[in-house]
Image (cartoon, rainbow, N blue to C red; front, side, top):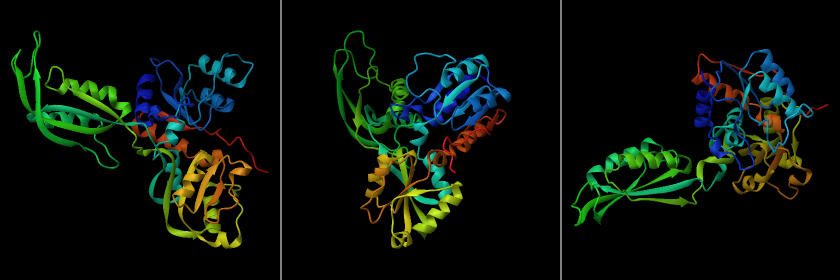
Length: 368
């Protein structure tokens, strides 16, 4: 198949629009019209991963961390990134990344980590704001259901786990068609009164363009009134971190031992705690794969007993908190299952497409 087919599907599932503004998710290297037959999935794009992709004749590397993250001014063999880019181009290997957009999905990096730990009743720790809007339009009452279904068909009207949500109120609209108009109802030059339904529905900004196209196409009026309002409401299923409950609470000490076992961790750094504190039960767990010091306050505010994340500095560990335990479980270790998730997303959709997980992906940190 063409690379475009694969990347369009990945974009529709992984939604690069929800990456952080400093990130570089999506297709990074590649010709969208080139043919692809196999993919290699990895956490990072490293020289050994590139070697592996070449050895198995992979046409694309799908990674969690982007190969190009910051600005790049030269592509030469004098640095590791430039050398990899040249080799990838020489062997016609594309690169696609799903980074903070996969972090921000409720079912993404944090979701699969929560699965491993057996967390229930989960929700986003810091939901993402500024991504929702409200569409309002007015339509003859007999066409109200048609317009509602048009909005729902493109994804508008979703609130949490509910869909097909709208508010409808009836009233009377007035208008007068001028010369050259082709009015759906009424007479040119005469004021017309029409029984109308006002329809309101929430939508994600990412679907706005398609929504407006389909709404205008389905609307009977020559010049439909469409109001768009930005909302401050956060998206309940998009955002940073995750918090959930353990079905069977464990002592803090026993829970940390279980985390080490389930995630195959050589060690865990935790905030200083007394034996009495380590004996207290853990029922509510907050977590954030990768660097998550910015969410310590959110973990405390939601009443978590323990917060699991990575890349903590010395002063990130609280010293005066008798409740929240903060644990650094390692960057690679907290995101290691992203490879399995990306592999599943590709393999379940493209059943005849060869996709394998890299055998070269290892943590950049070694413990001795």
